[in-house]
Length: 430
Image 1 (cartoon, rainbow, N blue to C red):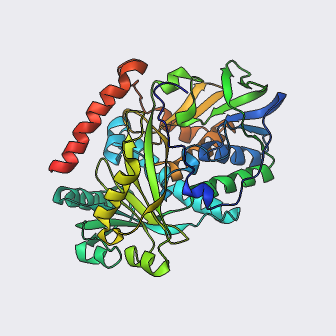
Image 2: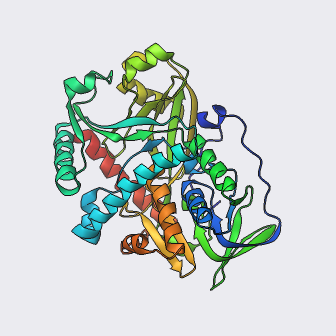
Image 3: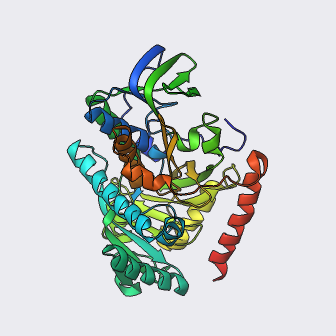
């Protein structure tokens, strides 16, 4: 593991303990051949593999661990429209027309996520609704402006709830109002990843676990090499995100793995859980260092939001998460966090998605910036379209300019930690 890769807690997530043991898939041994070789069995890689197999391609997926071991199986589970940066940033990067297209693509990505769950019978606890909540007056103004902008530019309906309306469904006095999106929602991320893997295998995809790729062989007929084998292909898809680890240095220099952390309470019982979030929606505040939370099917509160830009878990992680949870819900003073876990998300300098081609036969997608439950599936669909000869949507993303993180491998984290300290201070002061 590179020296600057975030170190996640060794404890398993609540997601792993809430599901039956996973299917066992053999590692790659020897030499294989495929139309498309995919690095990574997360949402992007699995969705691309499924879409390509349904088009008649022979696809092999190589996963370093097990399906969903990365961010796809450890995230907060909130599925939203848009990307990791706000629409104004995309307009600055691409112009009005292309930024509008990207929003339309993301809306389609959320719709396709729900269709995929239904079509393949994936039992992943989907629930409708997401609220972005404000703690300060400036955030109220920003959310109201976002509501108006989404309606005017995109015809996208968001609902403003004042403090009294929000308090009807959210038992916290911390927030001044909310922007509610009924089309967004949340799911069990690991159950969704495993469901995608089953759907892909049913479509004919070959999936090898415990097969970390050690080298990408470039050229007109690229190959992915592991310690025990290789897959020669016509096309390669790099969907490792924060876990590329030296495979493509030009991608890694434009992406930084950041640690993020979640806790799950003990079961609260249905009555006490419903008293916290009456409509079952997911919630996130709009601070730079945000909190987000939702209920699980077995009536736990899942609460996350800490981030580590230093490559080390925050000190006193469990106690810090519990303190933040009780600031939102003081009525949980007697409730413990039974599980605490973390993982790495991939961020770009501009927080915009970084999708495109390294070469005519090598495709990639990264830079989901903590906003990937819906957009990573969109990326998989768009990469599959491009490989099948329909590259119009990928070409829009490829026009986004991405710069390397300053400081190189030695200094890029210290510089980012300093910058993030300013944003956290802003959250506290105004």
